[in-house]
Amino acid sequence: MKKTRKQKLRKKSACKSDKSDTIKKKTQEKQKLFISLYKNKACNVSATCAAVNISRETFYDWLKRYPSFGKKCVEIEESLIDFAETKLMECIQDHNMTAIIFFLTNKGKGRGWKNQYQLKHEGGDPHKPVRVVVQGVDLSQYPKAQEPADSKQ
Image (tube, rainbow, N blue to C red):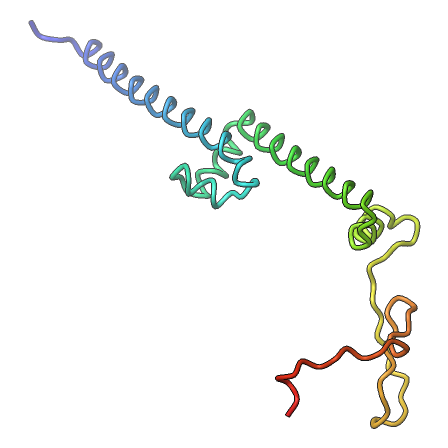
């Protein structure tokens, strides 16, 4: 029995559909794996791509083509930021001055907090010590740090 042209086209179409479904399933599986590893890899795209065995280009293609995948990635990134902010606040509560300054220079900009250093050369004798002022504090009034023993010659 000879197949008609329509029957042949249907068969080709069914094969393409099966291949397409297989590719879709593999993509969904890899996306699920990516999402499960992304948080553990601290939202490091390169490390997660390597673990899932995909290229960065594939990752960025997925972001464009699959909005739900992109949304999950953003949620993970936001949760990592939330975690870091919580840790920063713990450091501030422990009176960690570096954390306090970091917070104020990033969140207190509207109140005049800036992480800014200005160096001014006031002229004068080049053989005299240089006066260094950092954020209004004259560092020349503090004793010099001891030089390491191996640097003395």
